[in-house]
Amino acid sequence: MKLTGVMTGFVAAACVIGFTAGSALAQDGKAIYMKDCAKCHGESGAGDGPSAKSLKDKPGNWGTGGLKDYDDAKIAEITKKGGKAVGKSAGMPASSKLSDAELQSVVAYVKTLKK
Ligand code: HEC
Image (tube, rainbow, N blue to C red; front, side, top):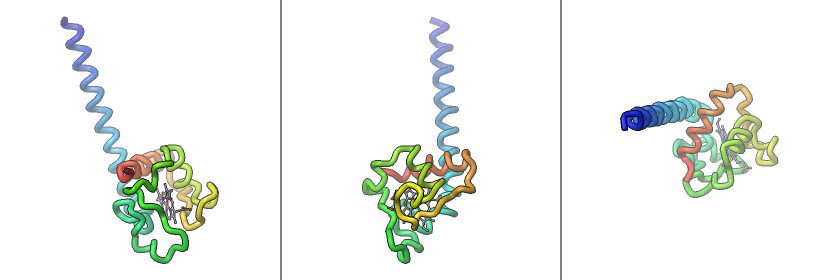
Protein backbone atom coordinates (compact mmCIF):
# COMPACT_ATOMS: atom_id res chain seq x y z
CA MET A 1 0.00 0.00 0.00
CA LYS A 2 1.28 3.41 -0.93
CA LEU A 3 0.73 5.02 2.47
CA THR A 4 2.67 2.25 4.22
CA GLY A 5 5.63 2.89 1.93
CA VAL A 6 5.58 6.57 2.78
CA MET A 7 5.34 5.79 6.49
CA THR A 8 8.21 3.31 6.32
CA GLY A 9 10.35 5.89 4.52
CA PHE A 10 9.51 8.47 7.14
CA VAL A 11 10.35 6.16 10.03
CA ALA A 12 13.64 5.15 8.39
CA ALA A 13 14.60 8.80 7.83
CA ALA A 14 13.71 9.66 11.41
CA CYS A 15 15.97 6.84 12.62
CA VAL A 16 18.89 8.08 10.52
CA ILE A 17 18.45 11.63 11.79
CA GLY A 18 18.12 10.40 15.38
CA PHE A 19 21.23 8.27 15.07
CA THR A 20 23.30 11.09 13.57
CA ALA A 21 22.23 13.48 16.33
CA GLY A 22 23.13 10.89 18.95
CA SER A 23 26.62 10.34 17.64
CA ALA A 24 27.22 14.07 17.10
CA LEU A 25 26.41 14.50 20.77
CA ALA A 26 28.96 11.87 21.73
CA GLN A 27 31.53 13.51 19.41
CA ASP A 28 31.18 16.86 21.23
CA GLY A 29 31.34 14.98 24.50
CA LYS A 30 34.57 13.31 23.41
CA ALA A 31 36.29 16.70 23.02
CA ILE A 32 35.20 17.70 26.53
CA TYR A 33 36.17 14.32 27.93
CA MET A 34 39.66 14.43 26.41
CA LYS A 35 40.20 17.94 27.77
CA ASP A 36 38.60 17.68 31.22
CA CYS A 37 38.38 14.03 32.22
CA ALA A 38 40.96 11.85 30.44
CA LYS A 39 43.82 13.12 32.61
CA CYS A 40 42.37 11.09 35.49
CA HIS A 41 39.96 8.65 33.86
CA GLY A 42 42.26 7.74 30.95
CA GLU A 43 41.43 8.03 27.26
CA SER A 44 39.50 4.75 27.31
CA GLY A 45 37.93 5.22 30.75
CA ALA A 46 40.23 2.65 32.36
CA GLY A 47 41.08 5.04 35.21
CA ASP A 48 44.69 5.22 34.07
CA GLY A 49 45.14 8.87 33.07
CA PRO A 50 48.48 10.52 33.91
CA SER A 51 47.01 12.38 36.93
CA ALA A 52 45.44 9.24 38.40
CA LYS A 53 48.78 8.14 39.85
CA SER A 54 48.79 10.99 42.34
CA LEU A 55 45.17 10.52 43.45
CA LYS A 56 44.48 8.94 46.82
CA ASP A 57 41.19 7.43 45.61
CA LYS A 58 41.45 5.96 42.14
CA PRO A 59 38.70 6.27 39.53
CA GLY A 60 37.08 2.98 38.54
CA ASN A 61 37.82 1.07 35.34
CA TRP A 62 34.74 1.72 33.20
CA GLY A 63 35.72 -1.00 30.72
CA THR A 64 35.44 -3.70 33.39
CA GLY A 65 32.12 -2.74 34.96
CA GLY A 66 33.25 0.34 36.92
CA LEU A 67 30.15 2.20 35.74
CA LYS A 68 27.63 -0.61 35.97
CA ASP A 69 25.68 1.01 38.81
CA TYR A 70 25.59 4.39 37.07
CA ASP A 71 22.70 5.49 34.89
CA ASP A 72 22.66 8.75 32.87
CA ALA A 73 21.34 10.83 35.75
CA LYS A 74 23.99 9.56 38.14
CA ILE A 75 26.84 10.11 35.68
CA ALA A 76 25.53 13.65 35.06
CA GLU A 77 25.20 14.35 38.79
CA ILE A 78 28.71 13.28 39.78
CA THR A 79 30.17 15.07 36.74
CA LYS A 80 28.42 18.33 37.55
CA LYS A 81 28.63 18.31 41.36
CA GLY A 82 31.83 16.32 41.91
CA GLY A 83 32.51 13.30 44.09
CA LYS A 84 32.18 14.97 47.48
CA ALA A 85 28.60 16.20 46.84
CA VAL A 86 27.42 12.66 46.14
CA GLY A 87 29.25 11.01 49.03
CA LYS A 88 32.20 9.83 46.94
CA SER A 89 35.83 10.90 46.79
CA ALA A 90 36.64 14.60 46.58
CA GLY A 91 39.32 13.49 44.10
CA MET A 92 36.53 13.67 41.51
CA PRO A 93 36.19 17.42 40.80
CA ALA A 94 32.90 19.22 40.07
CA SER A 95 32.44 20.42 36.48
CA SER A 96 29.88 23.04 37.40
CA LYS A 97 30.84 25.26 34.47
CA LEU A 98 29.52 22.81 31.87
CA SER A 99 26.26 23.87 30.23
CA ASP A 100 23.39 21.38 30.24
CA ALA A 101 24.11 20.57 26.59
CA GLU A 102 27.80 19.99 27.32
CA LEU A 103 26.93 17.87 30.33
CA GLN A 104 24.54 15.80 28.21
CA SER A 105 27.17 15.28 25.53
CA VAL A 106 29.93 14.28 27.95
CA VAL A 107 27.52 11.80 29.58
CA ALA A 108 26.76 10.40 26.09
CA TYR A 109 30.48 9.96 25.48
CA VAL A 110 31.18 8.42 28.90
CA LYS A 111 28.49 5.84 28.11
CA THR A 112 30.38 4.78 24.97
CA LEU A 113 33.28 3.79 27.27
CA LYS A 114 31.04 1.79 29.60
CA LYS A 115 30.95 -1.99 29.46
C1 HEC B 1 41.40 15.10 39.14
C2 HEC B 1 40.99 13.80 38.61
C3 HEC B 1 39.61 13.65 37.98
C4 HEC B 1 39.08 14.37 36.93
C5 HEC B 1 39.71 15.54 36.17
C6 HEC B 1 37.76 13.80 36.67
N1 HEC B 1 37.51 12.76 37.53
FE1 HEC B 1 35.83 11.61 37.57
N2 HEC B 1 36.54 10.61 39.20
C7 HEC B 1 37.78 10.82 39.79
C8 HEC B 1 37.92 9.91 40.93
C9 HEC B 1 39.12 9.82 41.87
C10 HEC B 1 36.70 9.17 41.00
C11 HEC B 1 36.34 8.07 42.02
C12 HEC B 1 35.46 8.61 43.12
C13 HEC B 1 35.13 7.53 44.14
O1 HEC B 1 35.10 6.35 43.77
O2 HEC B 1 34.90 7.88 45.29
C14 HEC B 1 35.87 9.63 39.90
C15 HEC B 1 34.61 9.13 39.63
C16 HEC B 1 33.86 9.44 38.52
C17 HEC B 1 32.60 8.82 38.16
C18 HEC B 1 31.90 7.72 38.94
C19 HEC B 1 32.36 6.35 38.49
C20 HEC B 1 33.73 5.98 39.01
O3 HEC B 1 34.63 5.77 38.18
O4 HEC B 1 33.91 5.92 40.24
C21 HEC B 1 32.19 9.40 37.00
C22 HEC B 1 30.94 9.05 36.18
C23 HEC B 1 33.17 10.41 36.64
N3 HEC B 1 34.17 10.41 37.58
C24 HEC B 1 33.09 11.22 35.52
C25 HEC B 1 34.00 12.23 35.21
C26 HEC B 1 33.86 13.12 34.09
C27 HEC B 1 32.74 13.05 33.05
C28 HEC B 1 34.92 13.99 34.13
C29 HEC B 1 35.20 15.17 33.21
C30 HEC B 1 34.17 16.16 33.04
C31 HEC B 1 35.73 13.62 35.29
N4 HEC B 1 35.14 12.55 35.91
C32 HEC B 1 36.91 14.25 35.67
C33 HEC B 1 38.75 11.70 39.37
C34 HEC B 1 38.62 12.64 38.35
